[in-house]
Image (tube, rainbow, N blue to C red):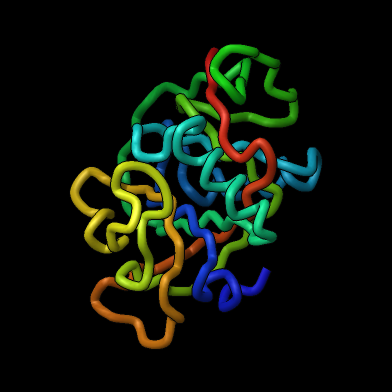
Length: 190
């Protein structure tokens, strides 16, 4: 997946800040997820918070762009974090929060309420100008990405509105790129 092509006008980007999670270093998480993709064909990237709720935000966003033939890309900004949740493995996942299925044995997702389903994960060195994006779904739809992603908001479903020509002060470092796959986002429980 070429980095330049994922940040073109009209592209669907799920932006997320990432770092240490459930006492596990980001480098270890990346290696584990890449192995899960190699072994199982997909991985579940765990997360929390309400800004990218699986059923009301991520799934409608991803379905809309996938139906139009656009891949949905997870663009991740590495950061220092101190997420000290316990490393409890999710035992079950659900697409709708009602019908639960076992998480496949080779897939380990820990310390999270939700997960994104990905079928690729690449370490990259790129930049995403959040001022050239807008929120693509929900009550903040149309709000510029650089106005939305601030404070406690560390993830967003975005559409690229302008070609990424020259980075501005609103550009962020992207260190990981993944491609979302169906069912795109799920609920988790132990």
